[in-house]
Image 1 (spheres, rainbow, N blue to C red):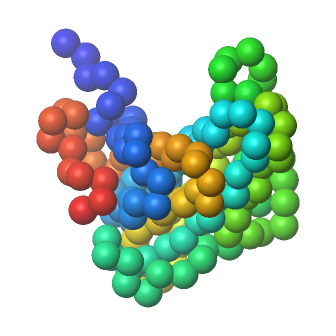
Image 2: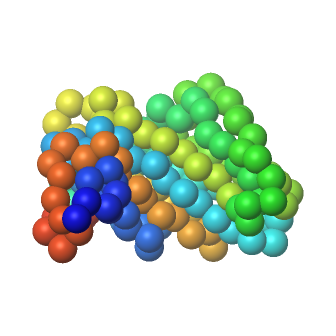
Length: 146
């Protein structure tokens, strides 16, 4: 039986809004998949920390590109660019209900191992750690905040 994608290619934390996610030593990067219905817009802020309790937490101003869409599969992703920042602000438009923000593990400062993305509104955030450094069966994956 072949191994499925969960545990081989990625791990997922569906309720990751404001939660610390282990990155260095766990995966090459994290893809944050965000959604807020109603065309109201939202602001998402990226931070880094040294451990899962948030030691040394600081903004991580590395987001230069992200993608948006309606989130219902009816349209293609739109690439958006900005000067390096720790925040992404989606417009009050249905075509920006969903956003995808990718962070590479190499972007973290020395001695920092955790990242989190926080919605200032009611947006949901799913953290998908990708390119896992150790592949495991899903039941053997470590907790993403440990």
